[in-house]
Length: 298
Image 1 (cartoon, helix red, strand yellow):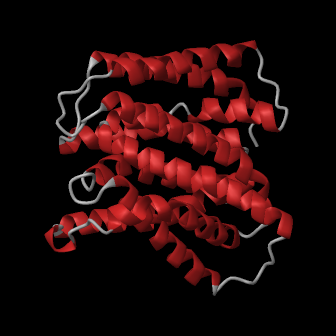
Image 2: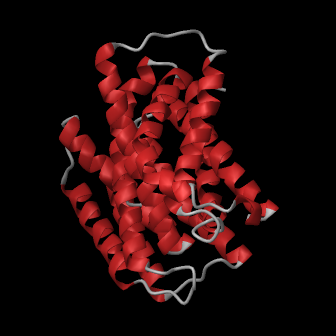
Image 3: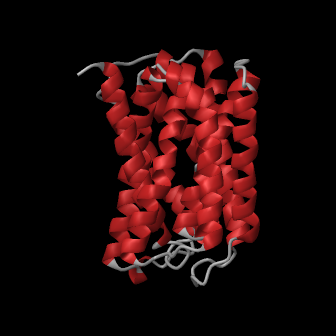
């Protein structure tokens, strides 16, 4: 099995984990653990895991100039990305959140064109416009009878901020993921991310009443820390080191399919015409954006 195939498998597994994570994390927030407290738990756990794993990896010195790049990647890949996602997910529904994340490939293309001078072309510009119209439709007109969706509009907007941040992170992390061993990079990445999220999550974490949390919710928290945080980031970094950022980001549009099936099975969400219409627009936009990319994808 060649490295490209392994990279595609790794990214596929990460996508599957992300897909079920929408419902699993939603069951925790905001009833048992508030969003920012959950992020602090998530990033603290990941930082601990990766620094322990780092003890078993051959030492690799980080160049001084790259610390700033890792800090910037941590801001967009951990702090802004995770804080906006979990806060948004706590306000909206799993299906709406997963659909909104599909805008990430569009944002990757925009940032690639700005940062690495990648040409866009008329077809891709059309795709960006169509996809963003779908995103705006989902943000503005989605309503839900789900009692857990306390503010769908704000929640969907925050997930869009998360998708934008994640898209920028993929572009920023590309060269770093090639230059350094995945564990070496990610342990510093999460350490910087932890420093950035502590001010936001500390107060909420002190409010958690641990003895009132059911056992199944502890399992959910553990799943998010180990699988959604640790395993997905390592798998995505490996994929990013072997594939283009645009190729990795394309896998994100499998998330709504997985998230929707899982959410409907467990009864945590429902479909409506606005969600379906917005989804079709976003998928059409992503198709136009990625059609030419796939032909030249490494």
